[in-house]
Length: 138
Image: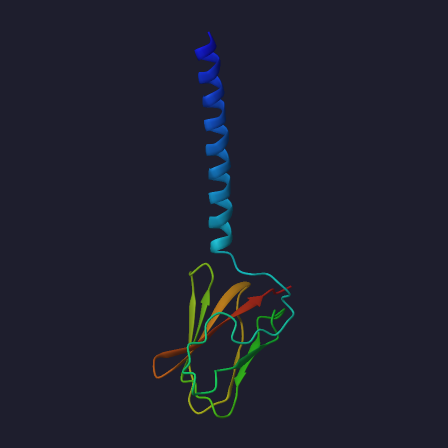
């Protein structure tokens, strides 16, 4: 009888511990791929990736308004920095907008659909930076 009570107690604690471990794993996986929704009215510069040589100035771009309430955004960067391609990738990966840039220091994009976007700036097929954009049409 004593062995049966011990076995039930051990089984109860094993179930309790495995349930806790599974719940922590679900929280970790949910946070791992979520987009940070910190102050969304703040202008975000060089926010995800900025692989640059330490001897050169880091790439900086401004995306505004962010978040966009109309689906229209303007992207600009400094005069001494070059961009020849911009990719806007939805966080659901169901759509990509590709923009070719020729000798410009700003681009305006219109008719974006609601959602979160990753905006990737390239020059000569090298990634300069990735920034986040949120579109919330009313």
